[in-house]
Structures are given as structure tokens and as C-alpha cells.
Amino acid sequence: MKWQDESAQLLDELMKPLPVFVRPMAKKSIKSKVEQVAQQAGAEEVNKDHVVRGYIMAAPDKSRAVTALEANQIDLSPYADLLK
Image (tube, rainbow, N blue to C red; front, side, top):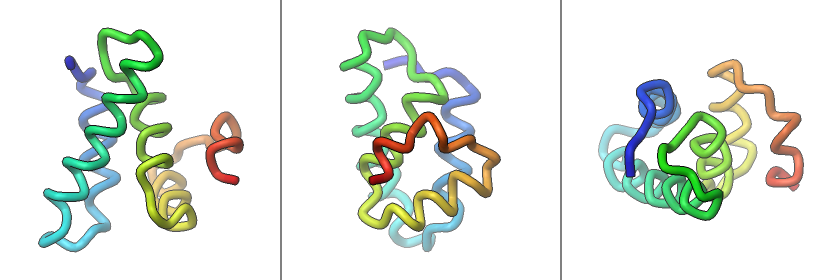
């Protein structure tokens, strides 16, 4: 699936806080979830919204996900249902 440049950059930024040794596996897992979200939405390209939704859904610890997203100036109000 094709990724918008902005989306790929956001995913890379969200991976930075993770320890280097777990980053590749975590990125693979999250990227897979993001692409699944995009496919379910019928999208041909992964956009920023898909990255945020997939990241939240794949995160084992929602509070860490919130911290990482807020650090990247992501408005979480549209994603409140996923953060419950």
C-alpha cells in the first residue's frame, strides 16, 4: 500500500521514543495495523488519520500512545472512542 510522505514521517516520529532494539519489530507490527485500518476505510493511500488510528489500536499501553501523539501535536479529540 502506498504511504503519503507525511504519514511515513509521522510513523517514524512515533517510533523514536522506543528503544532501538525493539523499534524494528514494533514498527512492523504498527505499520501492519495502520495499513489494515487504511484498507478497511477503502483508502488507496495511508494518510495521517490512518497512522494515528492504527498506532492507538496497536499500542499495548494507551497512556504511552497518548504521550507520543501529544508530543507530535496530534489532536486526540477525534480519537476519544479508541482511547477508552
